[in-house]
Length: 215
Ligand code: AP5
Ligand code: ZN
Image (cartoon, rainbow, N blue to C red; front, side):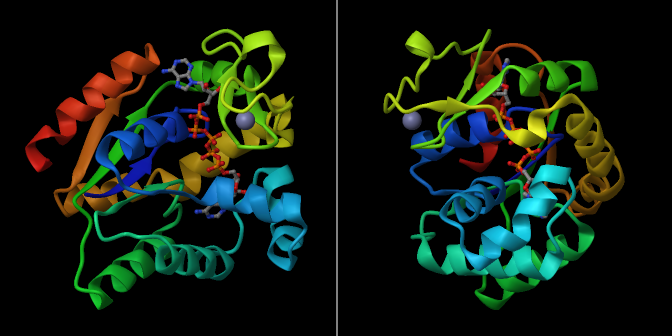
C-alpha cells in the first residue's frame, strides 16, 4: 500500500501514520521527523533546514526531494510506504510522480485529514515530543505518564514551531502552498477526505474504513 497523508499542521497525520504503519507493516516516511533528526544531529542538511523549521516555512523543494529520495532508497518499500508531510508543493508532487513512475509504481491513495484551525491549534499547543524516540504526546488528549515519554521514558520537549505565532504562519503556508495538492490528487481519482475531528480512535476507524476497498 503506497499512501500519502495530507492535512494541515497538527491534524494528526503523524499519529495516524504510526497506527497505519504498524497495522499495514509498511514504513512511515515523515519529512518533518527526518528534518528534526538532521537538526538534532547537526548535519549540513539540518543546519540548512533549521531556520525553515523554526520559522514555519517550507524547506526548498530540491533539498526536500533529495532527502526523500535517499530515504525511499534506504527503506524496504516492497510492501509499500506511508508518506507523512510529503509532498507539500505541486513541484514536490510532480517529482514524486516521476520518481514512482521511473520504478513502475504509483500511489494507491491520498488521504486528506480535515480539521478546523481552532482544533489543530489546540492540538499543536498541547503537543509534547520525545527527544529520544520522537514519540508524540498531548498534555490533554494523550497525557505522557509522569511527564516523560511513555514509550522510552525519554525527556519531552515542545517543538519551537508550536509557538502561537509560528502555528498561525504554518497554517497560512499550508493554505497557500499545500492545500492545492488536494485538487491535483482529486483530479486523478485517488483523493479521499477524512473527517479528522474527534478522538484518535475515531479518526483511525474512519481511515481504515476509507482504505478498505484498496486493502
Ligand atoms: P511536520 O513535522 O511535517 O509538521 P506538520 O505538517 O506541520 O505536521 P505536524 O507534525 O505539526 O502535525 P501532525 O499532523 O503530524 O499531527 P500529530 O499527529 O503530531 O513539518 C515541520 C516542518 O518541517 C515544516 O514546517 C517545514 O519547515 C518542514 N517540512 C516538512 N515537510 C516538508 C516538505 N515536504 N517540504 C518542505 N518543508 C517541509 O498530532 C498533533 C498533536 O495532536 C499531538 O500532540 C497528538 O498527540 C494530538 N492528536 C493527534 N490526533 C488527535 C486527535 N484525533 N484528537 C486529539 N489530539 C490528537
Ligand atoms: Zn521516547
